[in-house]
Length: 286
Image (cartoon, rainbow, N blue to C red; front, side, top):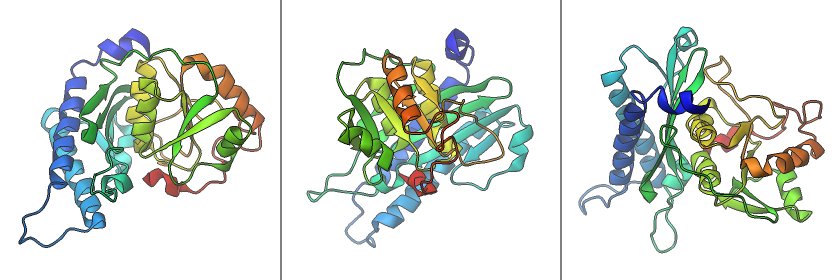
């Protein structure tokens, strides 16, 4: 991807950013306290409303400018015509649905959820990616990727699911090779690698194309390494919606991460090769 990735699609980048900004504002507004005379909203109702409202906001914003492009969204039925399209927007209107509806004991909302907007082009793959972190007021774009700081020496800092870290990753920590950093939302985890808060995000629990398309676009534009667990390329706008595993890491630690994964059986010839993780696809909901 390189300079072409960063500069050729400046006309599409603003569309993605605007769509993510609109959805972000809606998601935050939905969390505002309801009038005293209104019926209470349960966390699940809030999550459902957030998913749908963000989906409608993003698709509407994109349709205004890109009427003929296909859209693949978590919140809409898959239209197989996307497979013949030259341009496909891949969106996750609310990544980290569980976190979006959670408050702590003091009533403080969780902030580790995200909005994903990516653009795939035939023959080019991912050409635009935007990840918004609405509760943090942050927006990351492949058009203007942040500079990734150097990775510090020491044990790998691995971003993992806060509820279901895969057993093989926990074994890295038990062996003193890594420190696990739990957090919600795939987008939040990948942006933590981009910011330098962690060195790598390793996922083996099952995801879908919309879970990683935008974060991976930002990560690659920022100079990070992003592949399947066995080192094979990540592929988007393919018939199979499920994209079960990925690793996004700092380039300074790529060899170290690859050695750990190979030793854990995730190399090209390993027993745990791509698509054979044995984990549940349910983790894609984080």
